[in-house]
Image (cartoon, rainbow, N blue to C red):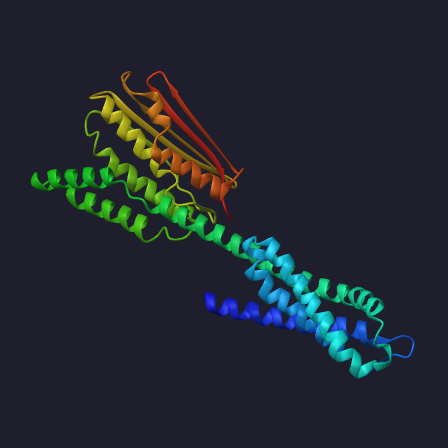
Length: 338
């Protein structure tokens, strides 16, 4: 349903509720107990009250009250009440109750007491309706902002990852390496997954695991013969779902910081296990003593992952980052979605 249709539906609902409310108020105002009859004059008096209430609700509230012009609103309401009394005393009273003319003070007090409950209920209903509608709009806006931010955080492709892999692919192609076709397939698979398969907030766990395997193999090209990469990911058959690309940053950081600070003896150990509805992920990597540990745990990528985890999992995850002596460990435990 588009925005215009939603607005039209909201207006229709408001009109229906207004009609029902006015009907109830009119009957409670007009029916004389115990005769259960309606006097001829009551529809005209009630129409006078309802018209004043509608004017306050649909003109004065949006024009003054909602723009915080409270003094102008109060003065305008007093003007409407004065006009209402003038209509009653000057027009309706002479027609229906000509014998009561001349009792100005008593009539004014009676009119004010008579009109106040009806107007307060009608104006109060409109104010409550607008408040609920405003809250719904705010909630919808928050949801849209949240979805937009999640989509932005999710779909960012690290340009360094793409640049490094294209460089590696070029080098292997120049050497006529037999690895070239498999690298092309893995890169195509990773990019396809990142660009097209991750549009939903959650994807099948098997797809994410397959992506982790391809993504790790591509990053492994950076190490070549300078170290060891262990990927411990047993085959998982599951109906559970996971937020896509959550694990990307941890894997990418492991390779980036290891290769940037070491020229040999590099190791990256990635393990992923599922037990019932919980996922256990751990990524360990070596790094040189000259690396800045603070930067490792405070990067933009990690901040984005934390935001996504907070949005999507709230209290259903635990993320522990431990920079120790020459070993950097990330441990993530999260409850999977069914």
